[in-house]
Image (tube, rainbow, N blue to C red):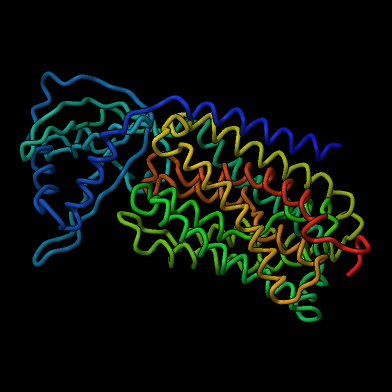
Length: 456
């Protein structure tokens, strides 16, 4: 009954989020400006724009400027080294609404007074910040830009610090909880009965990201909304989670196989998640995947706590059994925390129906459904019995959405994801997979019948 209430709660959140998307929002000029400057930095057009903006920022007369305070992020655009020149750097300030300001660095005469406001800029690129600036518009190359100068050092909101710390700690302890349920026998199944796991991992890390890539190209997300495309690859490149084990239990599938697949894919994700993101997103315009940061995140938030949990279970099995329920509850709380706070913090993203409209929600639901359908067809073609196919199907379509959302939130500011599209994609997948999972479980009795429930 508790599990049913949990699923109903997720559905209610989905029904709450979807109407928000019906309120339109105009395309933001800030994003277009950001792209324009980025293209210039790559030397594709107006090669001198970066230099011109820097020169104008240094010569600007701030008399008649107006003071402004807003919450947003720093952006850094770099232009590669040229012959006899150092690489150029241009800092931008972006409001949460998407408006862009060119940051004016202090001149020699201003450095003694303003230098402290500008210290540690690059270290602050990944944080949400509160800016107090004075702004003024000026024309550069016949276009109007708004420039900003700090009047106080930017500061990170306290709640934002707490939020990021909570994300890290909650996911860390959730993965410890997963480790508390595992022993080496789950991994030993790879060697004693490898066929089901091998097929499942091919589907998880081979077929599913390929489906996401094809779908992203066919529906135009790759070209028009690249961060949604990255989100599609991210969610399909993450391992399975406890949700797939829960669904397999209700589906009366091979639970031992499901747990072993989740365990094995979690370990493999240290390699495959950053590798697949780097491979499929290598050609996405204006996007560079921080593979090193993602790998470090996977190591710290997935592998290390998993090993800690397994070690505790090996040494103190009774303690592990007593605390497993607590950590399972924490997993539910963590997912709800990420979804609810993420939605409330990014309502402007859901209001963008051009980006997150009917096509987007259809794509997300189709992605998880295609995973489960492929997870039926592929194993059946290879002669896998229905009992194991139920587990493989659910493992293919259901992913660790908590992990995907955490990664998206930790890297979105660094990558310049203006509308938190990676998080929204992962979060909507996390909601949609429950509905898709229930539909598949209901259909298994007809399409994947088993003579004796729980037998091989």
